[in-house]
Amino acid sequence: MWRHAELSDAELFALLRSGAICYAGNRRLKIYGRLDCGSGRRMKRENRVFFVDAAEAMAAGYRPCGHCMREKARDVGFAG
Image 1 (cartoon, helix red, strand yellow):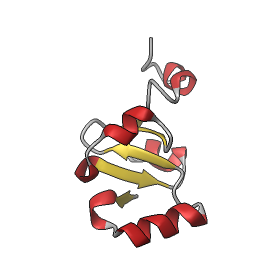
Image 2: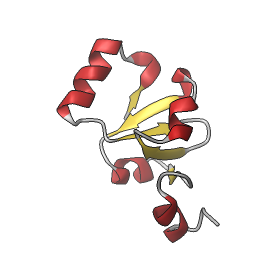
Image 3: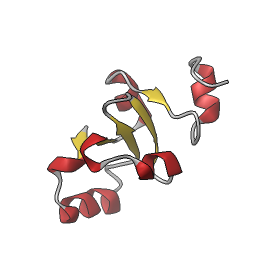
Image 4: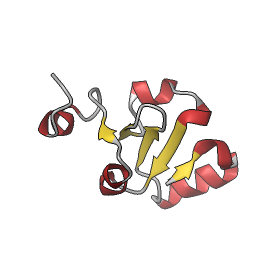
């Protein structure tokens, strides 16, 4: 897991280009989602963390986003 606030823009772009980052999460709300999620794009930089995959996010105690990952969130009991 990487914290957005601890990465320079160059480091972040390098991780994105290499495919090392696939999901972003909100460390305060403990929610993760896809990088193109509108909800995730609005969160503050200091709250944003990045994950390699969904398994890493779930192992860290994060739940799927109800917007961009509706089916997965429903599967784990977090979306209506």
